Image 1 (cartoon, rainbow, N blue to C red):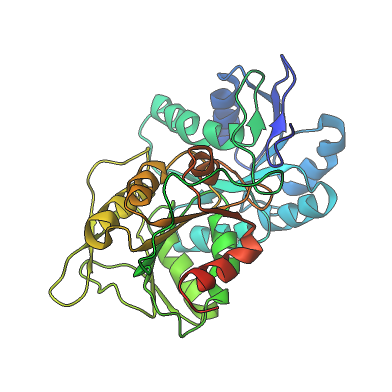
Image 2: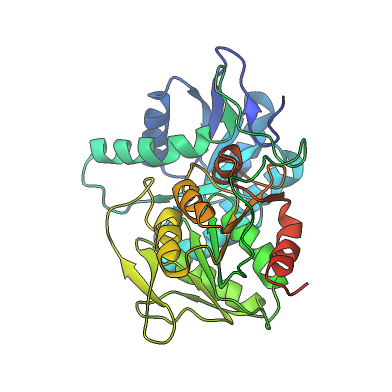
Length: 363
């Protein structure tokens, strides 16, 4: 069986990476970090986008790591040409933790970049820089490939019907919608959330795996195109209809009982699934406030964040929707939920808004 969004590697085949950055130091650092991994081969480096494009036909890379700000041809123009000429190639952007870097990264993700990593300004030592690159960049590269002997995830609704639910769908109408998303999330949210009308009758809470600043800019961009108000959540925000709240980077977003309406509580308790914010933190807290009166939606993303929380909510009778494999950038998070038999529906991205509206009685 072919997995739509993960290329199967042959025995002994390595992932071929072209490193594109105008900094000699960064090129050497990335190359060193990646070549410590026996599944990855750095087939070349380039100091700008024009050089990179000239080398792609000879080097045939699977993945580009692409700096944003470069002379001659910057990362955005390079990305546009790669998407036009090499649509199957994976592109991971290198960003900076600045307002400009975050804004350009969001532009790049909307233009077709598959994922990104942030450059740390002061790592303090070479060993620390290498460790950070190994921890953050390697998983983002490997998520797009299926290694020999690696088990396949459960198939999506494009190839067969979704597995049966663990328990019947609750007849209790949902009182809130919770969305979990990671890799590919900004583009998915940009398609999904504007399709929900201003009259949508429930609060919507979103956990998107992103660092501080990125989540604020994402919320601002979504607010400019959505009929519903969108904001980065703050401590004590009321959870009420007409609002979409995005978890802030580096904080878990939880729901707690308030006097009149549920409230947002933010904390920096330890990461869950190596994530903060974590989908599981939100879902688990919602099970305590709403019990089964929640509609959960798991969108594209790497890993299994949201699986535990979905299991808790599903046991209480909540509905769980999962994005299908074919429309996901990475079918990790939704695939884990589908594989565990927790999904009530497995839905292409362009039909999720319709399914949400139908479930809450708006369609």
